[in-house]
Image 1 (cartoon, helix red, strand yellow):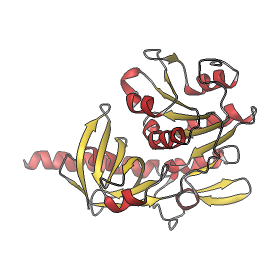
Image 2 (spheres, rainbow, N blue to C red; image 1 turned 90 degrees about the horizontal axis):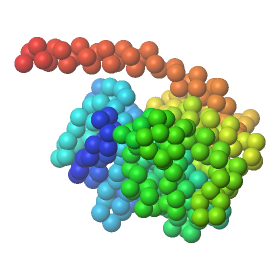
Image 3 (cartoon, rainbow, N blue to C red; image 1 turned 30 degrees about the horizontal axis):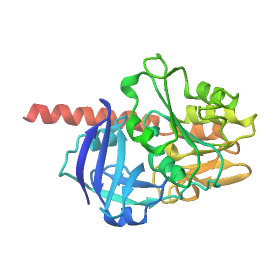
Length: 288
């Protein structure tokens, strides 16, 4: 079990947890993830390690409540135990030193950029984080990212904070040269973490410019150990498993058509699980 030391609401559906996990914290590297289970009959879900402190024996995870398991996890409080937590899993991305690195985070993918961008900045590389959301109320960890990046770019669909538009539109402006001088400048490398459509759009944006781009394929994961095959993807001419071979891959080599199809495979089961949870809640309320 892993004890929750602190909990903070980032949005109405997004929670940040600091968890006591000394063995995981001691071995963690930026970009790795953990697999958690909330109850005995529950599913296993992957969560990126947003931050870690080996000295304190703590890791930070961020949870967006989109399904049954994430809602159950989001309902836990300080002092509660997470039933199972395994990690660190996966490999840190291989990013050559030097050059301007831009991290693009969509939604709660911004949390996964935190320790990655800090690590890159501490190497001496100029770094920019571009994070986006529908409106300013859904932007997360802006202060924390601002503290670990050379530049922070905010994007909102409605223009309520920062650039009005998509993260890929702002990225295209940087590629085209907007931001030279005192601004962040043109990226030499791009790292994208977030929903599948966003990562695909980032790959399309950087392809013609010939900019090295990595994407995190953790949205596909189920088992986290390579046993189930649920996260199988095609990268170039090779079959890979996101959990053990990744989660980071060359964005321009990923077969996104296949990845999107696989990402939709479990939609019916997720809906059925949500319906069962609703019935359980009604039964519990009736018994009370």
